[in-house]
Length: 109
Length: 118
Image 1: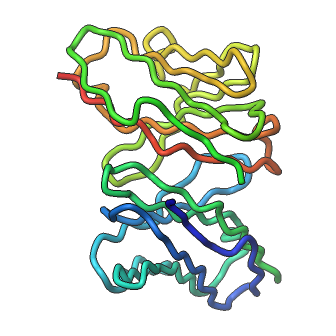
Image 2: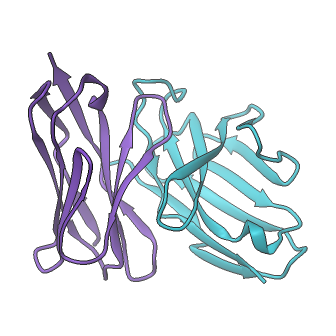
């Protein structure tokens, strides 16, 4: 079956760095998304990786290794507003989205 | 886990026809279902929120007469795109939550339906 794993919850300190991992087993791969979702709001697009490597976008970076079925989202200089759920989703061979359950990130002062 | 399915996974239709997309929560009761539209490799745009047995709440700019939403049971919501046009071609994603969609509710996302209007 198809499966996306990511930690349920993580806690980090304001100003620090946190890495949220996502591992996947899917029937084919056409890309991987990271979304940020604040409580009660719609998800916001953060990144889309198709090729292996690190893509940096300001304080957020996303890494992909297709051979390992692994991605991570790296958040630097954490701010209180980064407290949210982070969703990993993979496009399978049929371009369907397989979703992880999301990682709730708690930022403490 | 909480599984959400969508049917069909992809559909191609002619301009002017109507298309119905189903969203089902397979192993839980979904008080609230959300319909999103994803633009290519971008954010999800919330179209509407539906509560079982009530009329859907549409986001600003979404035509409720064009995108008909029905949430007749706790496990099924449908989105009907009426008189579809090529600009309606998109990837439609639903999500479901057990509660009323508030801050403490977790949304579980479906795999999406790709609509192509010729």
